[in-house]
Image (cartoon, rainbow, N blue to C red; front, side):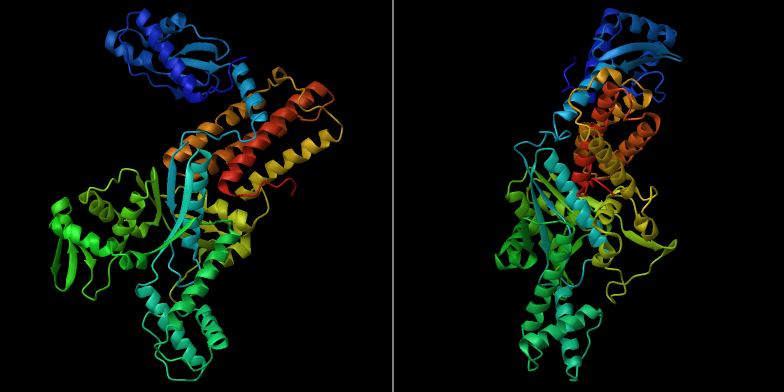
Length: 548
């Protein structure tokens, strides 16, 4: 039997090699051969349009060239069982069933099927969430959190050692507004004069923190007491970390902006850029001369108020990450960073810092829908559904899946009615039900004391069985593709397709039959599907239930 360690990519490389060999024998010059999946599965699994290209060059009929190439090719029937030529000039390749049977054996013998070593001995840093501790995590933070965590899982499944990192600003304007907001509520509760800050945080959680301060520190605090800074920050971080724990997200490192001021890295950065004549003062502000680096306009690093923009500390922070010698650095940012992050990269490039291993993922925003209507929200006024609220309403698994079922660059409409639906319409239910159904079937056969390892793959010849085998075989390449693209949706889409093919197989083929040998073979295929579904769900951080 053909080696099960072959992948589709390797098979395509074999086809290309043998195609070039056939072309050489026929006197055709070597070409850049492209192999694509057959649009019509009746013709085969893969096809090449090389006869059409050669026909233009040699002024011959493309179908004649296709027949000529087909007759010249010799491929092991362990890999390719059939080669055909079809109009107007395609040559098609049908992969042997023996190959797919070998994949079944590999899956059943390898519970971590899908893992690769492409990132072996490499380390990656993934920075995500990075919300300042000024309030509960929002829905937008939720999408960031799940995307970052799943990207980390994908990298780990490809052999990377991953550091999950959370970066926050505990010394900026937002933190000062939080402190003033809590202080105002503190004095309000005590019936003392207070001025609520402009753009202050108005949520009930602010009053809750103020009440805790009264309980823990008394009623005699002064307006400039440091408690109003340290305590709200501590409480909000506890709240944020608790929400992330519920989502089963844990961080290895926490970095804060203030540290880069304290250790002199910000000042060092400014001095180095000044030395390169890339910093100047104007109108009381400090500017980064991006116009001399190919940009239309210069950018403000420090406002006339003395407040730094994101660009300055983020540049110092990213240089720090580069200096920690990661092979890959991934930033998960909201689309509102579109204007700022290129300037950070530009500053690093100007300083001679290596940046080609920094990958920035910009995700689009989330809209909550209920009854088909958009839910209007305001973070500052705290008229919003928090991430905690969402988890409580629809559950962790649904939250995790819904946040990755659309591409990172796609705006996400989170339909609360669909998320709460416990039917096949809900994609999470659909996936988990497929896994639970398989577990139930396997248990029924195990009770009959069947030897599940004694299966005969040759009995799996129904069209839907081969179709499912082909789908399972794709999984390692899907995991690799998700890594290359840094796109969790690749996994989510694949799992939906796999569940659909299993449900079709279940509808077309009775798994438990009167023929014991056939039953065992079909149980083997179901078991392999279970392994793939379980591994895919594990990458997404979603439970694979054994019963529902």
